[in-house]
Length: 188
Image 1: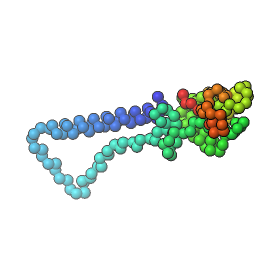
Image 2: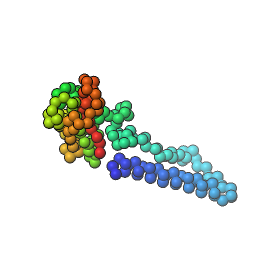
Image 3: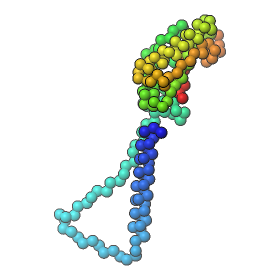
Image 4: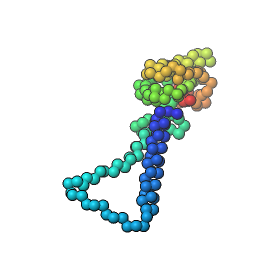
C-alpha cells in the first residue's frame, strides 16, 4: 500500500473516531438525569475566558494522479496522459510535445516505484520485416532512454518491437502509415 494511501486511511480512522466521540458525548448529554442543573456561579468578567472549540477539519482530497485503470493523468486537466507517440517516416526521434508528456510520465513513475511500463515500438508496412523490427526497437528505445535520463529506474521500463506486425490502421496509404509509426506505453 502506498504511503499516501496509508495516510488517507489514518486520517479517515481519526475522523471516524472523532465523530464517534462527539456523537457519544451528545447522546450522553441528552440522556443526563431529569434534575434541573444549577447554573454555574458567575465569575467576575475579567476571569471569564472562553476556550475556542477546535473542530477537526476534513483534509482536502488530494488530486488523484491516476485514472480508474491506474494510468497517469495530467494533474492540471485531470485528463489521461497520452501513451502513444508518433514518428516521422524512417525516424526514431521524439518531438518536443512528446518530450513534455514523457516528462509527466517520468514524474509519475518516479513517484510510483512499484509501477512499470512496457513500451512497444511499431512501424508501417514499408521496409523489410527485419528492418521494421529494428526500427520499432529504436523507437521504443528512444522513449525508454528519455524516461531513464529523467530519473526513472531501468527496472521499471521494458521494451519490445512489433515492427509492422500490429498496425493501428490496416490501410495502405500515408494516412494509415502515419498512425502505424508509433511507440505505445502500457502501464503495469
